[in-house]
Image (cartoon, rainbow, N blue to C red; front, top):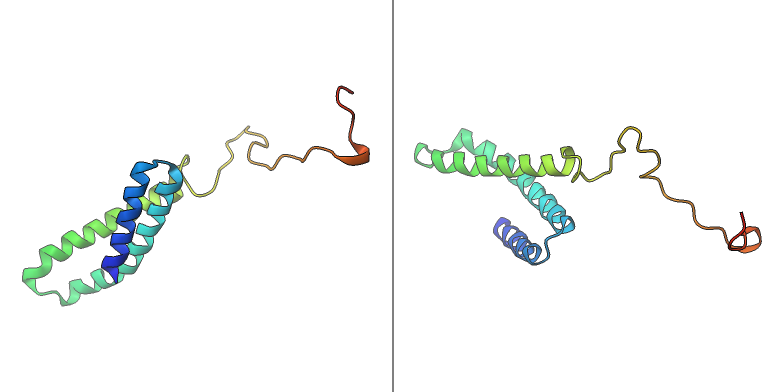
Length: 114
């Protein structure tokens, strides 16, 4: 099951290479972060039961999962230009607020009037 999720994310990564936008990168980072969250528990538990000859493999696999999660957390939550929510800069005014809809109907001003 984990392998199929990883293959699916890899195919999505290939699609994003053909259409490189932040929207595709964000989806991949969210997918990998979910994948990492599922795997980190069993990997950390593995350190208490692993046989010595498998320890190097477990260390490498855990380092990859932790590194992947760290990158995803940085770009999704901490890095201002790419985080999931916009953050207004001081003095930016209402740049992140929804603009008022133009007037329509009886109270609308004719074009050219002040």
